Image (cartoon, rainbow, N blue to C red; front, side):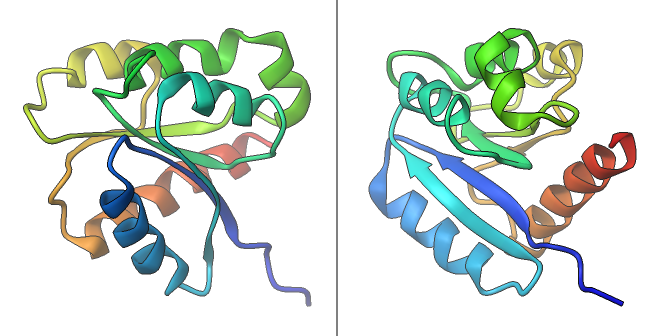
Length: 138
């Protein structure tokens, strides 16, 4: 029996220190792998058009294009769909300010909206749950 490939994660946050902290935590898990990190929403869309990603962890307040705007593009953008090839990349939004974006996120099919100071175990659990939904739809 072969082991399942690690969950491929994109991190998008304007703060390099936040991204590096999440990367260290996520990469410490055998079943999770950060494949890329970016500093704004435009970069996130560009990356999703080039690199297969299972779950995107997006800050709600990304520069140039918000995490909510990126989440809107994921299922609609033809180039993203072409690269991802499977059901759309799943999205977990994070916010330092408030979680009022949850309603908008649910309307977009976002899997979770979490505070930026989320406990790492909860972040891992939400990423795994989102990836499971994607793999189940495969």
